Length: 161
Length: 161
DNA sequence: TTGATACTTGTAATAATATAACATATCAAC
DNA sequence: GTTGATATGTTATATTATTACAAGTATCAA
Ligand SMILES: [Zn+2]
Ligand SMILES: [Zn+2]
Ligand SMILES: [Zn+2]
Ligand SMILES: [Zn+2]
Image 1 (tube, each protein chain N blue to C red):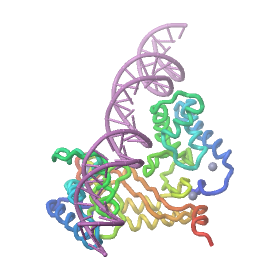
Image 2: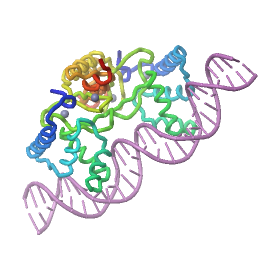
Image 3: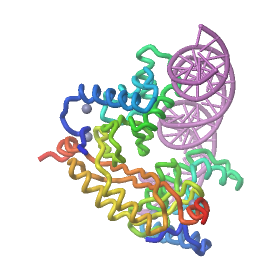
């Protein structure tokens, strides 16, 4: 797994591929990939950072919709439930998944300077967490793993020469 | 580090020791351990689970105070800043630290059935996370590590014989 | 002791995030 | 086309958190 949020990349295809993957997944699983849901996913995919539900509502309103909170939260529920987006608990906000269709349980890397959010492979992290939990007799079902710090770009900017 | 939230233990000393440790730490560091701050810590220490700021306000009001939100949030800021309590991001709530005065960066184990919250040693987890982040060129400054699942007691209850 | 200063609390108002409830519309299968 | 399930529109409300400013209290130096 790469950390696409931090690298230069073909962002147009980033959006296009994300939508296409989600559409394919929905077809395959009999889910309705409605215009609202597609639109919200596109809005998230435009950024490699997390947006609040009300940020999304603002965009929808700029586009002429009369969008009340449930519009955003319902679409986000759908996207998160099906793995097309992730909730970033630390920010009470949502980010498009960078690996739609691939089964994964990532760790999130949140840059405190530019707000970019990337996904990192978390299998070893989850293994270590599972082990620590097991020692307490605790069974892990889900885990929130979110790191805050500096992305490569902002690190250079902040600590020059 | 144990997972005291899930074990039988002398809970009276649990509260008493927590307050005493916080008081000692404040004396040593020239911090004001005011009645408000002490009271909020006690309220958290009564439970081995996370309470919302408004849960705390309810308790203070039952005790006769006219407590507005900043009362709770200020005390919680103080407690969290000095390591006497932790914020559980997944719950937007706060739990007393189980190891006041000891330097530690725990993982939290949150039981979805009884809502108990315990702290587990997270050094190996953080090491694994740091390594994954490093591969992306990311520098971790803080990390949220929260596992949701079933505590030993609730696990037995839920899956009998 | 006094006054300067920083820190803490009281209080009102408001912002930001999220859900409940119910009516209407659309979809999917029959 | 009818029907049941799913999705959307809309209003209202619940929950979590911060801003702003006034008033009180602790600390310490002069
Ligand atoms: Zn993802
Ligand atoms: Zn950055
Ligand atoms: Zn206890
Ligand atoms: Zn439990």
